[in-house]
Length: 213
Image 1 (cartoon, one colour):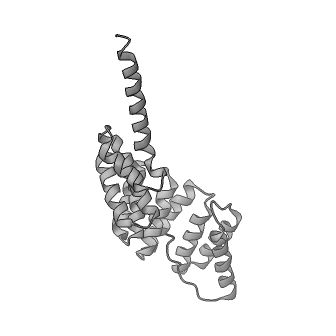
Image 2 (cartoon, rainbow, N blue to C red):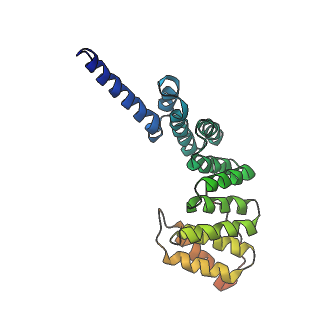
């Protein structure tokens, strides 16, 4: 190898490294044009470019453009069908777009790829509850709670499903348990649990809350 070739190889490696970084991380920015540029011009193709479609889909999901998110997740899954997180994220976009049956199918696929992740079971429970299928929703919540017993939101959502099915003792137990668990992001799970316990104590009628977006 001549001395002249070595600098060229170093530059090529740097360019490939930068391109790989942009492909994998373009969704961390809030500019879909970056991901679009990566998709159009990156020399990296195949399953790796799925990360750019995923990144653009996540930006669209954050912005509430669910149809665009679904379309980009479709492309990412076509290029890399073995990543469970892609199905879970497309399911979220579909659920928020009102495509509940398709969302449940995607959650099933995500669970098949990663059966020990509680999030997919929890979110599948939300979709099933929104469809009115409380029996299956509770079964899905049961698995989520078993896999992640410290998730206050999963306890709350299962309690809401129990309440809608008329199982007030089971609902009360879940609301009380939710209050003992730490909160991941905000206080809404505790606030809702307290409100539902107060309603149960006063004998006021309760209704199933809409699934979280």
